[in-house]
Length: 245
Image (cartoon, rainbow, N blue to C red; front, side):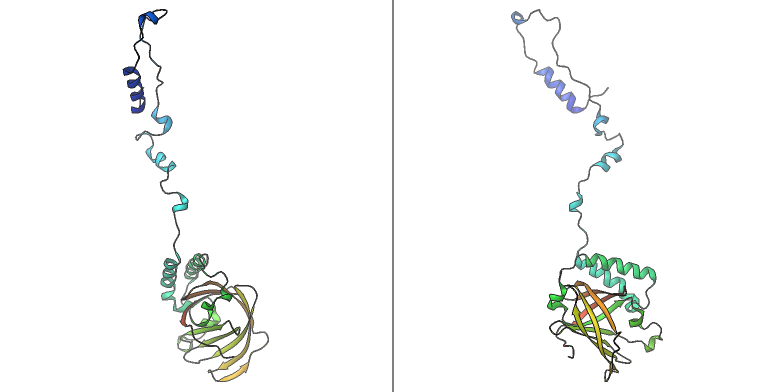
């Protein structure tokens, strides 16, 4: 059986460094030279042979431990999210598969939320543009495209706990609301007045209520989820905007 290079070296060393024993000290006189027994080493026992299932050896040893394999950072995930929603007309053209893709990226981003208590952060204040949602009522998908709002905005001011939703062309409708914090991330929303065409006030019915949870927040992007399961993704457009009291 062939010896490994290590075993051969041990044997050679043992042979070359064998001490000379005076005959006067030998009792009884040796008939043959004494040798240290060297067991044969089977390379396959240690799975080190390059010819014995090398793929198994490679599979057992990882040079990149799991804790060094970092996931994507928030910047990369935001880029992926914006790329995924860009062709979807704010969600109006999204298929079920598109919605799943966007939601999965959003969940990964939410796990990296840098603001753990968004309702205590001034990053929430200002005017945000809605760039994606799964809410069919906000997207107005039941209308022809030329009768849908071309853009939607939401403004929040934490110091007065007020919010405002705004449509753009062609109708410019608005609605304002009072906010009641439920925890550091979620608010109850009570709508108070609609403004038809942005001018004619109409008192909102008492049932016009909802909840909104802010699940990701930074200086330029916000992700929120509503109590009806809808996803909202918005980008900051005017941090100085004030909601009418």
